[in-house]
Image (cartoon, rainbow, N blue to C red; front, side, top):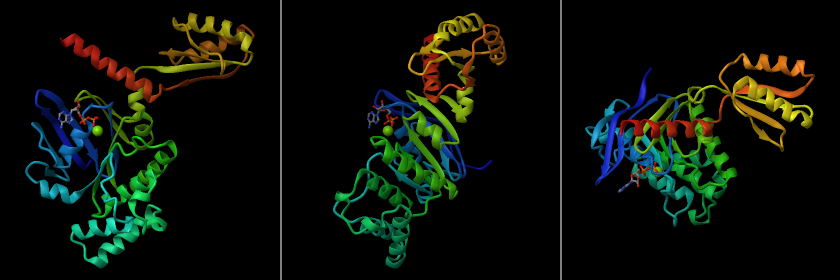
Length: 318
Ligand SMILES: Nc1ncnc2c1ncn2[C@@H]1O[C@H](COP(=O)(O)OP(=O)(O)O)[C@@H](O)[C@H]1O
Ligand SMILES: [Mg+2]
């Protein structure tokens, strides 16, 4: 497998504060890797190091095979960066911003205009191209910011919390844009605080917390790693909830969670034979169910479990 980004043991301190404490990260060519972590986890610090905007205090990293510290100019020629805040000039129009960037990247005026027109069309900004950015909606700004990062045809795109602060509709627009980029074969490093976003967009996820990697894998693997599945049952008659709840407790040793609104009982399931055992018991009791099934835990449940495990591990070391 060929890697667009490889980082090993990245360390970064701000004074006494250890922002990164040995972060490893790999991004295969043509894939989206999500770096998932809460506020202050070290996501932006990682991106800034990989974008050559900041030197690490320890560890090393390459982008496209070039070392971020020894070959920053080469690395910069490969990457596009979109931050949480739009990096465009408010007083210029959308089109002027993109042409200016193209000129800064040494395109001729004609090339810069052609590239700007192509990107405006791709991000559905053609109608707004001549308007000053100050009049753009949040979603239009974010799209222009993404377009801006693509002027130089980067091989690797860094998206640092591209949807933080966006309303759900605008967030969906950005997701569509990212999916489009990936369909075109771009390599994307995406940071996010949203499990759903990582699950939706990323092929692999690196979970970081307090400057450390707490888990790495495919979304499905991470869900499995947290252990087991969730069994859910919805009795046909709400009057059977108590009886089914008792059966589940006997079978699993756990009292199931009960949602009165949906009439659903859920309980952790370690044993996949549980479903057939349950069906036999329901049958014997003359109880019918509209829904019986196993599901993997949500990424939210996974993240909570992973960061809790990390805290427990640290306490054990201390
Ligand atoms: N310039 C800075 N000076 C001091 N501390 C900083 C600086 N930038 C970030 N930090 C701290 O480093 C940690 C990681 O920050 P950051 O990489 O921005 O996290 P994230 O992007 O995941 O929210 C946080 O605790 C943050 O407060
Ligand atoms: Mg950040």
